[in-house]
Length: 124
View 1 (tube, rainbow, N blue to C red):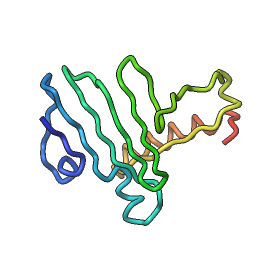
View 2: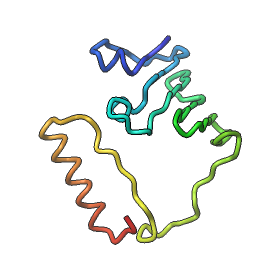
View 3: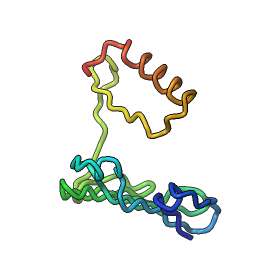
């Protein structure tokens, strides 16, 4: 099976089943692409029994290939990635995405979550 982000965004239905399924977003960061903002990627995932087995993200502008496989770790251009050991959120940099849903109730929830995050004394 295949699920494509662009076809779902165009209104085609998709149901994730237990069948082996490729999930593909050929222009991940469509809004960035349209506005010539250089953070665009090709994202591909493979799911079996509704569980992710592996994923690949190719950051086109940076020429970086991110790969991850269930139980095997994540890599960037073949180099193993790891999370920092930082456990104190006040010493952290938070990054967020506001999403594209402009439904008033969704916006209210997103902004409420942002307000809670910004009230923590974080670096940025």
